Image (tube, rainbow, N blue to C red):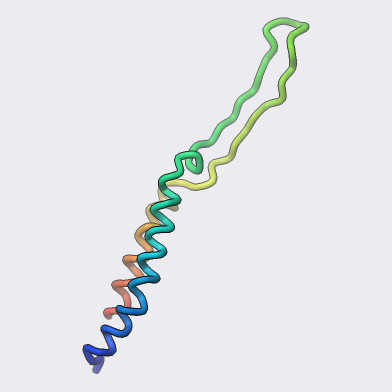
Length: 82
């Protein structure tokens, strides 16, 4: 049977780790550029116009990834109490 002092020791070790992971996930969610993808193609207005190369930016993170990352510390913290 687990004693209270053992649970408190587990909690003391997991709490900073869970808070750090949650803070990192929160900071990642605050960067809107990670969630925005972009694809542009340019066409000249006339035959002699400047030809520009196409631009593209891939989506680096998705909303489900962000939700999963921000909820992982809570799952990790609550699983120690079982």
